Amino acid sequence: MLATLFPAPAVVFIWAAFIVAQGENFRWCRMIDNGYAGRSQRVQAFAFATSIAACLFGFTFLVSFGFDQGWMSAIGLIVVSIGTSTLWSRVGNNPLLWILGTFAVWPVMVVLAPRTSWFGLL
Image (cartoon, rainbow, N blue to C red; front, top):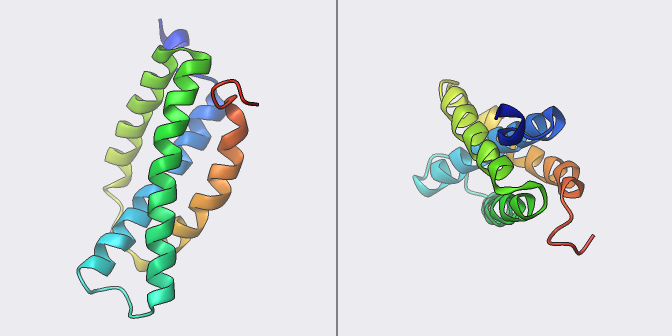
């Protein structure tokens, strides 16, 4: 049962890294909204664009992964998401992590993208 629920360990690890990076990006966006994180409009626009791209990528990846590998594997990634975000939420609110997480979203998406066929297009 667990073999069908959880995909390959590499995918689980990369997905967990994506969830952590995305969560740190969301923290930064939340602090920008609350007026605590800088005044540069370009940096704020980059943080918000990263947030939108991460949301769209994450949702699309899960649906495509479920289409390719089976819906139980996609549900397994959702379970990994919940566990990773719950554990990572214990980390303090550090502005350096917000910045590193935001910049880490892009390369992690690039590494994660070839792990699915994108609805048979690849």
